[in-house]
Length: 423
Image (cartoon, rainbow, N blue to C red; front, side, top):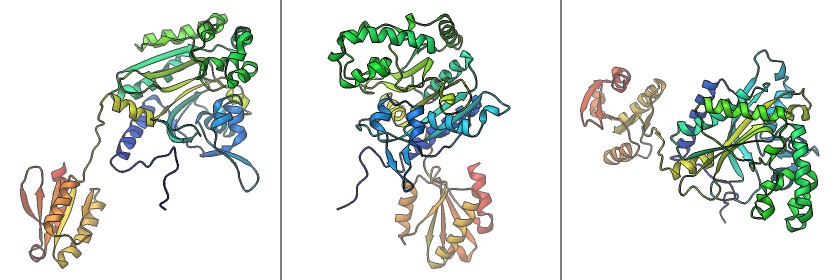
């Protein structure tokens, strides 16, 4: 019996992987413009990092993590998200002492969550995310949101909707938490077991429940915006003002609750309303997490970030019928005819590649007609024809497949001639 790929994972094959590479290049270029630097953290970390960083009450920690015991008896978890690892590295490497503040970082890499696979959602998925650590200025909240929006818009997406909310500071959250407990307690038995457990630990997350979203109490639940203290209210107003200044449209949704415990103040999600995108419309989300660095053993450090799934980004591009400008094909295909020509082609192919050109040749001893067909399939710009008769005259033929022209050149000038034609 053939071994198959694990459920919830995918092979990204040639022809598709080029789209991923293009998106990753766009992300890196965008981060360079915003002065964010790449960080690469381990794919697995000590389980305690995510329990403390993401939160014991979250679905990620309680239901979705890939956790195992290594040979040293340590509990290890494949990273389910990128923020906790990035902040752990920030603390461990004392980046809070760097001269340039805030520290602005980005990452691109695989994450792992054990959840039900569905369109655009896998158990191994790739996230692109950014984290800005060291600034409590609401202007950087707007910057992070702007970067996220530009990532999508730069790829051509137009059916975007930005939702923002404030979760307030600790004082505001405590007041809102008490109001939620009073609101839900009389009827909590009507809710799912998860919500019943959350009532005493993190009642805010009841608002994010997928099972009980239609319960009447959800619509009448106290709004966090009614419990913001003056400081939190002013902060949120400044974020909105900066977004308006940048011309970024948004909708304030008091019901927006991010699924991780470390968020406070600004929270946001970007959604797609493109037809055919699917029932789950969220493309990405993020927010501010001012207490996370301290929770992980570092100094009190404000932070904000966001993450997006490249899988869901590809689905959104498909829903809007956007074709990425992927370059395909090769520059040269070397066709050989005869044993001596085959031997000479090995040298010429190597020289062309050393000169920086993309080159292919035949390795299946095919007839010349089949070699030309192979060059067509590979969308080659030029075919270089080497035969024993040409070798006797120290020349090769270059055929421009687009123009249909053909000429002979001296072998020693081949590299320069081809590079000249390619400009």
